[in-house]
Image (cartoon, rainbow, N blue to C red; front, side, top):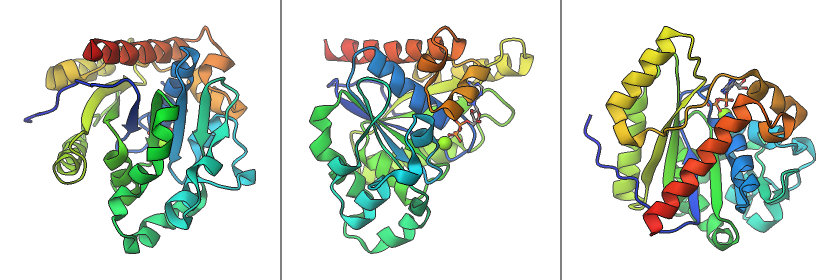
Length: 269
Ligand SMILES: Nc1ncnc2c1ncn2[C@@H]1O[C@H](COP(=O)(O)OP(=O)(O)O)[C@@H](O)[C@H]1O
Ligand SMILES: [Mg+2]
């Protein structure tokens, strides 16, 4: 597979999409916990929930049913994105929640002018207010995900350390390539992130080695272990760092946040 992506960045405040059209690979878990970790490291962070399931919103303690303005209203209804910014319990972390109505948004957006750039336009007035804007994508390569990738500076691709880990990755990379060519020349790969890693399993180690061999320096050094606290925390409306700060899940995401910050600092100097 030919890869023409580099990991250089020229500015610190940036928009990062988390994408993989495969479900259950850790996009939402990483979004919530990376966002909380970056905020804990004193960055100003906004998490955009772009999945109709709204798991990232509820996992960060937002009462999705009582939300008055969601990302759906901004994408479709012309609502002001500032009205859709909700504070989380983590100081420095804000959330633009999702809504189940987002399921129908792809069809509703077909008639909009510049329909791939709606999210990019929405985020413009917010960019200066945050060091990092993360976008949690749904398991699809549809128009909302295209919008997220068109708005983003880079993309994190979570890869689950399981059978068929690399299934569908070439399709995702091809989509990224097309978006880079046609819609967003800034778009880079922030990194492939190995998730749900269990060091006791030979298969997990084989997958880890295979992904590293394939994508080399594009793979984050930080690996996210399988850790039950990461799956428990969302039902309490908390990121792992508030639910159990000593857990492997919390520590892994803090390390990931630091790796991303360090990389940005290196690229700037
Ligand atoms: N590192 C992990 N350890 C344990 N459970 C995890 C881990 N990452 C994700 N999970 C669980 O796996 C399921 C799928 O993860 P999720 O982040 O929702 O994936 P996606 O957003 O890609 O569909 C969720 O139930 C989540 O709690
Ligand atoms: Mg998800």
